[in-house]
Length: 557
RNA sequence: GCGCCAGUAGCUCAGUUGGAUAGAGCAACAGCCUUCUAAGCUGUGGGUCGGGGGUUCGAUUCCCUCCUGGCGCGCCA
Image (tube, rainbow, N blue to C red; front, side):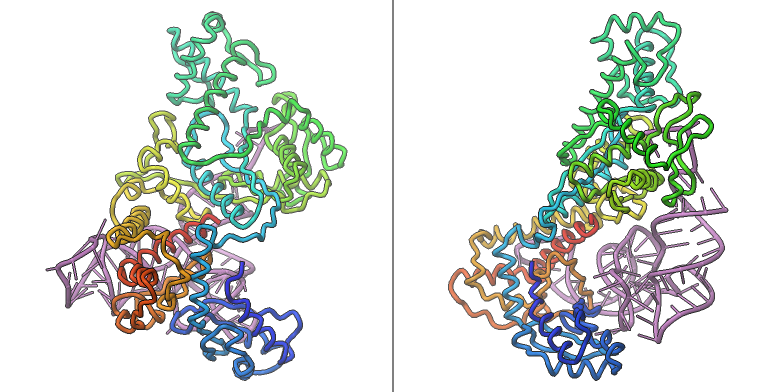
């Protein structure tokens, strides 16, 4: 998409070339720190000073003299500071941008830079061992926003959820369920070590009693509870596991639906075992010569790829002889590559950051042409939930942690998503439930909602249908602040001082300086009225709403 | 002890590839408004950019070091 500055760039490039600049010189345009300097600025003269061996300000003089203002679409060019050149855009050019914005409607700002290339974004990827917690919520918000941004810029995005439905956690889930079943049959409750204490396990146990009465009967007379991993457990263990995983997957799906997140694909870790991919991956890694056996365990030389120690792939017989977590994860990422995803992004909590090196090392050791930085990781810091000035840690249903569902019930879906995107992932996030619920200007969500409500109110009172406004018939030159036309670039706030206000600011203070309103037909008149009458409040609302939207998207990136 | 992330106004946070006088919201203070939704409007004050070195014409930004907080350092996931 053109940002309307191509003509200016072309003029600058031409001017630079005529001064003898290196062939690949590309003029960089940026927003001046202080809007009173102008709309755009370039440091071109300073960049050229060194290669040309001349003073920046002299070069700036010649560049300015050389530019064809008409062709570049600018009203003025001024030299400032050590050699910056400040530009003011031509009002007609700005109006063109606004007309283009209105014409493009909701599609404004879309680009095709992704060129339809495939990318898989993996996020949430919870164990099916309980309801989603707040960390999953942050991932869901981030992952979904990243996916939307990629779609917006022309990528073919697949949102993927990886189910860790194998391994020790699932064994614990099955054992916890059976412990609850026995409790319901009158035996003392003994939740196994590493087991799950949440209320939801009781629901599963109840279902188990209904569907597997015979197994439950048998269970109560057994002296020893099931042993072995998910591949060797039988009878009640298998039944409990299958039932629990099924119920919890349904529950997680319901949570995600309530959160408004939809996945394109769900990938089951267990399938990597059943279809032989894990074994094939291990065989390929052994064949690569990057593995060795020690103390009865199989190691991968991850230190060859920057890890601080080699990692166990297959545990020794004494520890069960199973594969460690990252082995199926490597096999899983091979499938992403083989499914044609030349780009893969994983959204995870920073508590998993130690797996990054391991997975990448495994993929490199395979030597099948996967790039070194594959997959990309977006790691986010931890979330704490605050209510009444204190940290909340307990959820009624999950027991030991606050769930996504809790947050949605407390403050609503949109507010939850907004609060998760409000901070960049690198920062720890304190989720203030009271703030998210409050109807005050301190709550950004409420602020945005009010902006929309007030704008709608203005149209309603004015008896105007916004859709009926024809920008082609309107005098857009009254809208000389080009801020809105620069979407999706994050808008720089213009500060509170009068000096900083751009030309044609629609605040009351500036209105009297605006050009007189000359009717050009009823429609045009109404269009101006739409924008001019609300003046300070309306324009500011719109600008702020746009800012928040852009800021939210920006943070999502 | 090692690795990753963070530390910017009273509070919560932005700050793009190294660039001009480091910004916003809220809070504080002053003035104004009481006809369109008062989320009032306008203005003012407020900073050793965690500390100290270094590179550079120029550092919140890059490098080194120290301090503080979070997370991770398992044949757990």
